[in-house]
Image (tube, rainbow, N blue to C red; front, side):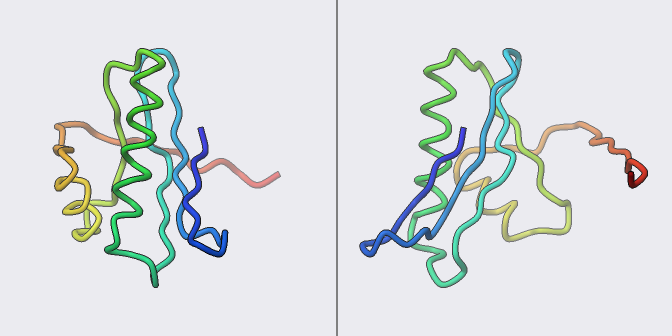
Length: 96
C-alpha cells in the first residue's frame, strides 16, 4: 500500500508505504517533507495505513526504527507503538 499526503497546491508533502503478508502488517517507510513536519501529517499517514491494514484482517503491525533515532522512536511511541524484545537481522547481497 502506498498513501500520499498533499498540500493545498497538490504538492506531495508525505508518503507511507505499508504491507501485509497474511501474518503481520509492516510500515516499510514513512516520510514527511521536513518543512511540513509536526503538523500531524505523519500521524495521519500512519493512521491511514493502520485502518487499511485492519480492513484486510491484519492482527498486528510492525515497523523498524534505528535504535539511535530517538526522535522517530518518540514519534511512534506517541502513536501507541512499543519496543519489543526482538533482534533484527540483515544481510548485504553482493552487487550484480
